[in-house]
Image 1 (cartoon, rainbow, N blue to C red):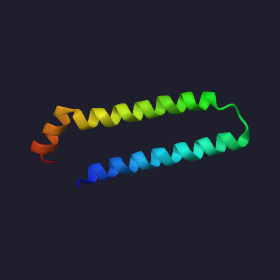
Image 2 (cartoon, rainbow, N blue to C red):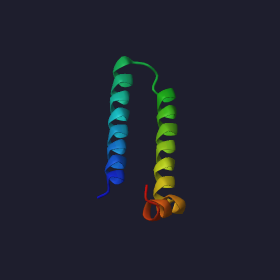
Image 3 (spheres, one colour):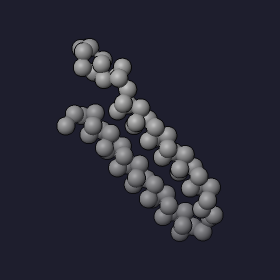
Image 4 (cartoon, helix red, strand yellow):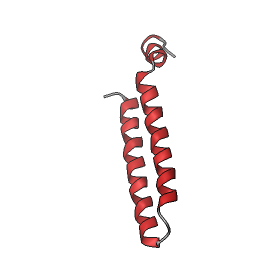
Length: 69
């Protein structure tokens, strides 16, 4: 497994953990939840888009395979 894939997995795990802690804090404080869920959905959508774009981008894959630093 490449270091890039391990880092991506760690980012996903950290995001899910952060989301869980955020939900717990909001629920326990009694603050209305819906604005935070809207922000969380937007954040998760952006994270998903970035991950999808990185894993399917042909140009990044080309440079990763053919260009040495």
